[in-house]
Length: 448
Image (cartoon, rainbow, N blue to C red):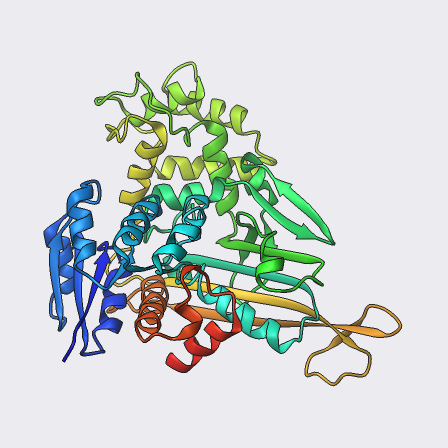
């Protein structure tokens, strides 16, 4: 039997579901690689056809040697390393799969990937990934009559676990999770492009109904404008892709920013031995480190819209210990990483707790008057009728197994890798490939 050698880079939560899917095929031999051998071994443990190795992604010689010896690389390391992975894969003519967005740096490698004859499958997770696949599927069924398209996704704690002032728990990098809420955003609304500055993003969060029992807010995520072309819906007058959080979360993140806690610049004064109250005093410019002075100054800086909201958020900051005399653990010499370390300790998932992946698409479709469909119409003109369709994924993690996020990202990525290895034409074109085509959707449906 001829074996296919697959290199999986990274040992995070999505790695094992991905590997578990791949080793269903007895022809696949998988090597899990990360900087810490014990972590790689924990992924490979008890899985057939799987081995573990330590690999430093900053050591280009070792990195290239590992890539050379495999037929496919699945990059599950932080996205900042993807361009390096892809460059080495191009040099050694090895295909690549990632679950991350196509960045500008990756897009610039398109020509080189085509010249090398390799495929780089990107955005093969849940968001991005599953969201694209189902959007393309339904848009094709609607025969390009989509007037409005909305897609919102959230990776959250299950309701019974959202028991903290932030309404959030970290299943991945706290820094990445928090700063994803501080990006600029662009979208199309009523035919016009709307641009939101990063500092204003959380102010755009508005209540959004997805399903009974949930109180979500939604806000735009990054740049939705290209998706009118990517999804082939030139007729759409509104295109918004965004994120979901529980009510109250976005206002708390904005308060962290307004108070000064999300500053990633290194501070010479931020030294071991300081208490959280000392740091908060310095961050806010309070007159002293007493709790009353810290709260008063925080209220001045954050300008809360109401006394109720002011009390809610300052009580939350007390819950996180930011006014306390406890010694602070300084991370990275900056406020952002120091805060993220604190939140990671307090807001990680505990044994027995489960997460939630919630994804909903909403399509407003315009049909000629008289078309029979199974949802209530709304007349938009004398000749045409508009209908709203929704499709919702509500995936809860298994406390005794995989989280919803690890399973939805890992398995989706694994399916993409296997389809590429099987040589399906829709995924085997040299260059940078994203799942925006109905041919890719058809292959996924057949495999899953």
